[in-house]
Length: 308
Image 1 (tube, rainbow, N blue to C red):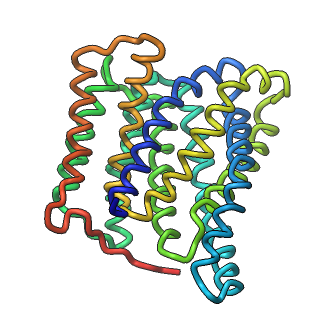
Image 2 (cartoon, helix red, strand yellow; image 1 turned 135 degrees about the vertical axis):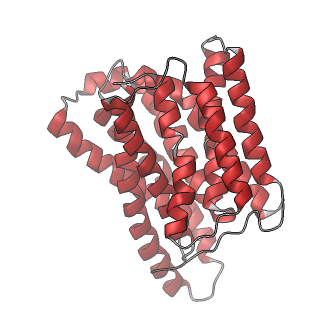
């Protein structure tokens, strides 16, 4: 299996996990508030990844003769990268949770999915050349998300604005991962550090603006464990590892399938019905992602600029 295909499959699994976790995240809001929920899931993600970091570290260090120098470089770059990724992730996920509580799920899903066009735009400012076919795929995907998510018109509310900030922050998160992936880093350690960072910041926010209790967290334990172990610990790690083998724009298109899998998981798990319009939206988004994988000349080439 080629590295490009392997990376794309990792990102596809990421989208499937994130989509199915939407049910758990929505259910968790019945017991705890947004900052408390994100604090708990992030800390669980951090704890789950500690043994994984130890296992992967031993394997990674055997790839070079100068173990001490490599370990020092990996530690430094991974910790710095994890902190920056954690800050972006914390802001994005908390704005998303607050936004969802103030707007409809469909509008929140559509606005959040706008990061698929924000990533290539940010890439231009960072000196990356985006193939024209990718812009076509992004446009097709946006149309698909509109068909899938928007049902009752489109009026911007406070919750919608929060979701837009979330989309911008997720775009920055993706570009930050791409930036640090170009260096000598440990993807699992970056993920581990990012969850510790996001968890600690969310803890401070929860203590300042909410009234978290152990009883409420325990009542939401099933949803928190699902989001913490799978959505956080597994999926975000797969995102970091998968992005090493593909471009940020194509990675974004694949991960944007999260909204499609959320709709499909609601259909399968919760017996929610999908209208013909929503099914058409799913098909359109899938088409955009598949089109982005076709190996046309220069399709998957983006110019990377290293600034560190």
